Amino acid sequence: MFKSNNNTTTKQGNTNSPERLNRIVEGTNITGEINSESNIRIDGQVKGTVTTKGRVVIGVTGIIEGDIYCLDADVEGLITGTIKVGNLLTLKNTAKIDGDITTKRLNIESGAEFNGTCTMGDSNKSTASVSAEGVLEAH
Image (cartoon, rainbow, N blue to C red; front, side, top):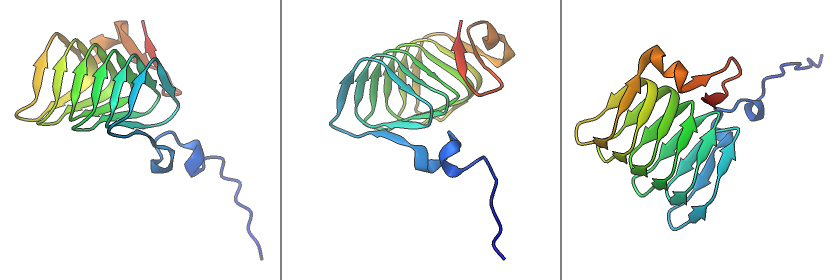
């Protein structure tokens, strides 16, 4: 009559679940290191390193002064520093990046600005890689 659910993958156990989104809202300023197991959206300002096993979204008002290490990233705001993405980096038309990019795949919309070097494809394994568990490792 009652069926037990032994499914070990729950919404809270999935790092890409929308319920596990961290947010830094506009008007918030953080100085230091951010480490997250799940997705993070930044609409405020961060001075320091941002590391996550999930997706990083930098909103239009988001400003990062430091390095970013993540699985996927969507950028609409400003980044000054290095960004290392294990899978897909998307630069929206309002994105401005001043620094180096390392990613497996890159999508750039018309209007996005980028100043720096870009390393793409499987050659990024020497600088950033994603393990079987989805952990980005900087080398």
